[in-house]
Length: 390
Image (cartoon, rainbow, N blue to C red; front, side, top):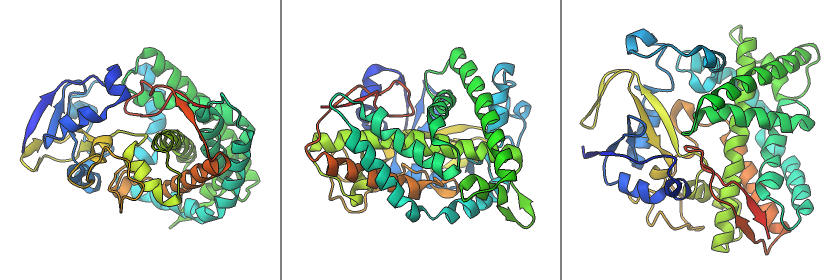
């Protein structure tokens, strides 16, 4: 295995605006010790795709060993509430807990029949597109309202509280950014507590008066006499909102920027190539669940590794001329939605929102022109600060 030690600040302005040249350098090696993160990262598609599916890697490790056994410091008191909340999240679980939660969530989520949501999404996108004026920021006025309104309607909470939901979500997901500091940590804890209180109130209402919505379905979801606890309900509802809007907002924004630059009119069939070309998430991490040898690279139980999605999507070995956006590319290979047991539960909804959102916008504004702002300094998230309509 060919390896290297590389120093590349994830907050370096040049890297933030265009990480793909750095990824190209990373892909000269099978694995890279990213000194700024202090862990091995995998830049090539084959490794990223395989590790996503390999059960020797997982989202958590504390179900197998204690922090003391792993040599980790205790969780600081000031962020303990955030991690206590996360402990109930599907995203952070491994089997058998993950299997149980995913089964119950799928039972509720799939029952909502994503295809049935298409007319409502089309009507929302058409209204938003018709309301756009020159100078409007498409990130704020178009890309954000679509997924947050859809997921709020789906859950069964009022859409007029969307600004609060967005504020809490932004403050919580900042915990995963490279520029995290004490202020961000304190803010994320406050947002977590406020969001939890809000969801507990709505869960209590739905228990008394269930409706035809996802929150009611999650409350009712049961298998072999097992149900979601209140803590799991809260964590699942918040996860669906945070994950269901943060990534989709910037998938839409990045896609609009790409389509305008390429003077290409979107079709539903382009969604996979758009997700490959400039994805909204560039790295997921996994823990090594047992001592193992990965193609000659020794890894120890408890090690954390990085899977470079943005790099894997641009791997020349699976996508010829990857730096070129090709609307006619046949079966583009990408890992933008993860893989294995943690494959994005909302993938069908995200794909539908992108297909409808993009085609509706360009149908309404066939000569669309935009002025993009810079990408946000929020690695491993990758999205524009603004996208002004000209």
